[in-house]
Image (cartoon, rainbow, N blue to C red; front, side, top):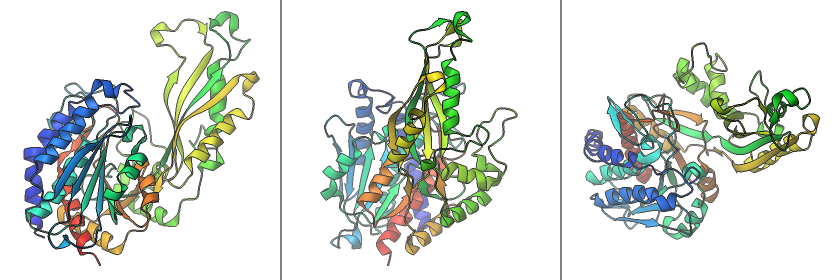
Length: 476
């Protein structure tokens, strides 16, 4: 492989083709089904997947087949096959599976002046807009990596791309798609997922674990209807105070530690070692350079503890509320109930459905304050993922690629987010090797305002994937 030619090819296709197409993609408000129940009627998801299909079909890739697959009322998927190429043609099937998604998070608020979720803006090395980094680039970058090999007549195994449109809504329907396409997918020995993150933009970061996610609604009812607060306070506890006591059952207010035993596990020694190395590389940036308000500090001064908190320890976030009016509409009224949307991030190896039932028991088995009605309604429970040991050939390949294109070694670490697809795929293909990586680095802010794609990182990541696919053919 001539790495200089790979670099030149990838840089050119990103500049001339991928970035313009990503700008078109950002303009499509194709929010995931959880945030747009009428997605089929609105047609934005079809627009996004058709945009990607048109680009894929327009590329001069030998052995390319691409189509949109639809099952029942699920969001569609883009399914792409590229036949084995060069010396790999005619050999035993040994496919590479590449994964990404096209659905997006909602707009959110707080975008800087001149930026918006649905209008692409390039400032320096950054392409701003919703979905570019999470995860619209994956389909383009994956195919570009394959093209970089064919451009030099380098052999590669058969490659299969699955680009779904429901990842931000827990990949509903994806298991059926995998089963439906299992004969065409085959049994991949390498899976490449480009939906994760990076600790900096200076080297290749490979994710070895993902936390699970439990989402549910915690609710406390104290009255059947709202009443004058002057008449009621001192006689009935407020629903908010009841909720405070319920939250105290789940989380230590001082430390953030989760009190439900089923959500806690010991951190494996090998993951502790990875966390130490990642913390050494990140240093003061282990806080992900979050936009803290003045005076706010991270939960620990120790980068190692922050890495573990974010990857292997359960944590709780309150992400929504109901029953509480806007400030301008808040009268002197004792509200009948308060409900909170809770999002638990669970350690990678915790059984999320069982843990969700444990949360429900903790809330509902013991009476709430003064006999108030308390409930926890489970919305979803997706388990995390812990990667198998990295094969020597793959470690060597990734480290070499990181050194060639970044000038620094690869870093392994855990990610605090969730990709439901990974746990499902690991169970279906237990002998596969995995590369889980991505562009979501410091301040890229996926899911929030001012999301951006770091263009040089996207290019270099594409180059690394090309190297690994080539080495996959040559491995011993």
